[in-house]
Length: 226
Ligand code: DX5
Ligand code: ZN
Image (cartoon, rainbow, N blue to C red; front, top):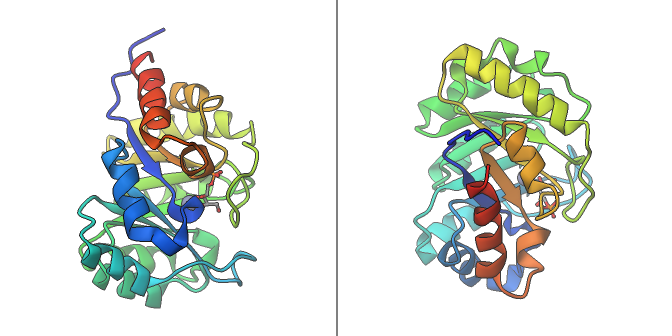
């Protein structure tokens, strides 16, 4: 295989953590080799589920989490929460373009608040939606399941979309992370990395494992082979 030499990052999603011990769980996945905490915000409006908000992000910072927090907004609208999450210590803030009336303005809000900005595309959403925003992006997140729940099955058409997104990013010459989210585990990781992803969200694959270090280590070993 060709050596792609990407700077791969693993982002454990605390959606699958034990919420009653969230600080300890975040610490544990970072100590086990996770690079950043993926923080899934759901509002029972844009998606049918309901999770946590900026107060919980702030609490993780207060608890002592220093790693980047990758806030994935599955909410509508987005602008008020962007400001609140920036204040709560978010590192990346990503949102779904369908959830903002003025996508460019929302991206500017993230940047002006001092965070890294990203857009998220649902499985059926076209890459065209981000084409004119590349200049403002630090991250492009492709959903490989429909947003709202952990533990769903990977949607295979994501692979072609990742390849097209990788081409688009490389052609832009910009340093944009290409993240993939949903159904990522030891069976699917290799193919999404080969298709061009460099940042891997994994919730159930990590938190449902008995030993976080073992599963993250196995993910790293697979990535090292690419
Ligand atoms: C789904 C969330 C994901 C979720 C992934 O809407 O955006 O981040 O935690 O869960 P798994 O890895 O279990 O598919
Ligand atoms: Zn997510």
